[in-house]
Image 1 (cartoon, rainbow over the protein chains, first blue to last red):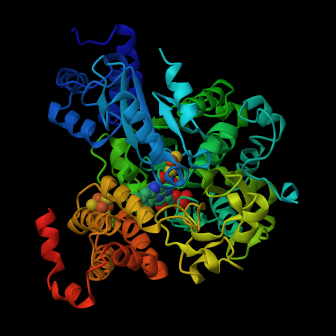
Image 2 (cartoon, helix red, strand yellow; image 1 turned 180 degrees about the horizontal axis):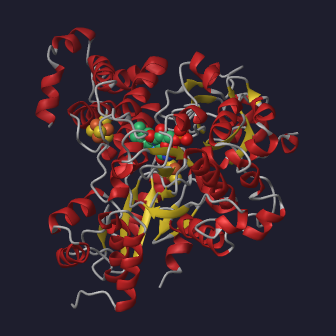
Length: 157
Length: 443
Ligand SMILES: Cc1cc2nc3c(=O)[nH]c(=O)nc-3n(C[C@H](O)[C@H](O)[C@H](O)COP(=O)(O)O)c2cc1C
Ligand code: SF4
Ligand code: FES
């Protein structure tokens, strides 16, 4: 796979660099760009980002591994996040997690063999008033129950 | 009756997130007023209002601003903390969605008062949609000449500020102010030792102020109604309105803006419609998962301000209220809280890294019925050894709920030991002289 940003994307990288007094600070937005483009952050991607920002690959790796949302392995097209922290747990979040896990036969940070779905048991998502909640990729679904979760998940394709 | 109370941070105005609607409702007028004042006058006004930080520590905002060095010989920065990852907290999100321009105006006022020309709004990565909304608002503000170089002309004043949105990527610790700075700078987000404090040496080694999103969004209305009037709202020592986020076992969970010092029972029963099935309340966490809990049978008369809560053994924190009914298994709750802190510990300090792990293991044993009475004391003492012995306050945040739950609900923990270990007599329990060695084996 060719790992390079397009000229437009490189312009975007420059824009991110210009927001901060030091270009190193652009690493988080640029990692986000990379993850959007390639789906996850492989060794090659991290090396490329290091070259772009003039940072050692080890530094890029260090930052990428500090955060749970940067994927260090490929995840599903639909990354399903189920919150089981307190407010969600009080309202059945753990049952939802078990249900989704059983539905696809995967557990925390695994994906289905066809690469379609992956599952993550997440910490509080800041949606406790809408507990229990799940998120699929970037979209939150709040005040759900198992039936509704099924409806949401079955409508993905 | 709650509709008649002041809504300063989240007024019920449709489409307020649009800059034109915000301006039509007096938006950006507070800033106009501020530039007729000196920097010190603005800081004093905020001090006089009694505003205290909404990020958890409840520190005087005006006082914090006054710690910043005067003069413009070096760059200074403002970091706005929208990491909002403390379980039970979901209020800043409302500001990104419903009133982002008031946050921008608050940033302009804070920036003017401290002579800051660059501000970074740090928003947790999971808030994709709300990051986009905040970015859209910032773009609108640039387009209309409210911020950036163009604001000099708009307001006919030579002060200007640039505002950037920075998206996190899933790490609770980034809400801790020094961790947030390392994250912004592009390093692993380890908290830093204090001192030096951010006001001396913060972002990129320069003087920096860090404020919570709600704190800054509260500043424009303070300027508008005046510090004097603001200080008369709510509790005397902790005045104003708060965005209370109520979750768990209530009929109408959500975010409600109410005065500080509102009765907790009023919030639960009158605002949130009580507990489903009219069940009794067993426990309440009043300010996000790190705050010590309250007993449900002792909430009569508890007011939601820092002083009143302190008298009852807790703090206001983020005003994220979690209600647990009589059927809740508190050992499971505490296990879940502890698992969270263990997961989020950055691992720099031994007491936090190891202690959180031990606490999780002991709680696991308790939950699974493999614990002894002595384990409860051990758990309590491990928490005590974390508290105050770490670089940042995550250690305390992990220890407080453990100590709080055991102190108030010891019977619940003992029940789990007793009901599950039928054949263990007290003698046998105490015959296990070295419980710590169990931990080592389990490791
Ligand atoms: C572990 C930890 C997590 C924190 N998370 C947040 C957070 O998500 N948002 C926030 O505003 N403050 C958070 N804080 C508090 C900040 O360190 C800081 O006190 C606050 O942002 C200051 O703003 P304020 O004075 O306006 O409250 C956290 C503190 C600790 C120790
Ligand atoms: S207290 Fe915990 S989270 Fe804070 S610096 Fe130490 S190890 Fe990291
Ligand atoms: S506990 Fe699930 S969103 Fe907060």
